[in-house]
Image (tube, rainbow, N blue to C red; front, side, top):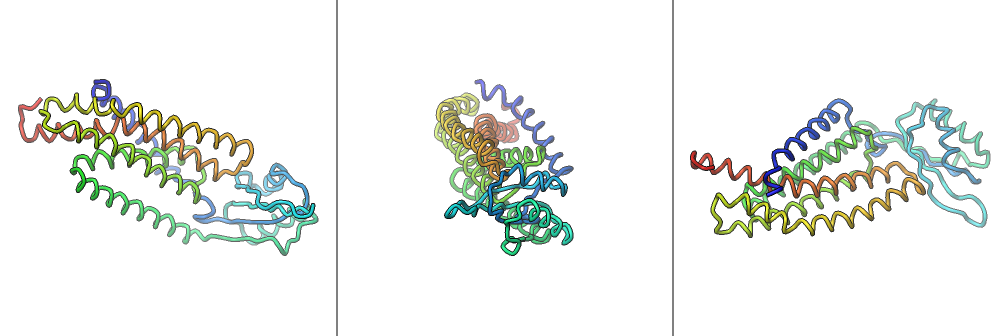
Length: 302
């Protein structure tokens, strides 16, 4: 009865983290990348360079936190590799000063081939709003499907575990100011799919095992259902984590783009949270909801 007996501790632990992360989201907010409002500069040095050299130039303009990405390659021995800089909005004077510094550092670059793209804060806010609306609609559709497929109490437990995982990912991103970019949004969508699948497997096993059982047997049935899926959940999560950790090491030491690092970190957090919530939140929460329902129907229920 490990999972059922310790559900109160799990609820308190999750509740504490949720409060911390929600406070961070409310006070600090999210570090929205250039896709949600910012500046993207692309130029080709046409000679050998390192990202550290580019960062030194950016540091002179107070842009140490800018995201860098290398693109392209070599053509007939001539450097064709481009640099993509993603940063906050800059005034026209600041843009011109930055481009002048890049030209001085790499005299072979062609300033006419450099491009500067800006995404306005209004458009970025609209994109973020559309993403939130889409998320809410997706959650509503999931609640409807699970209610029709199983019953409303199962839907409550499953969606609660899903919302738990979403807040965990966003909360960590807010707390450590990870860059929210298109890859991060893609990771969040993958976490949603992973979380809902993991919880549904547990809930479906409970539904199968609970048939013709007496109310007082529900705690034992829920605990047994979780244990029956424990090996599957842990094996799936472990193999997924092996791949994600390998990707993280590769991105940190070889590719080095902040948006890709944030992408993998979001997946790692989501897998850990999804595994935890499917075992300690979804099933135990369903049991708690059902027991309260029984108490309303029969005050003598224990």
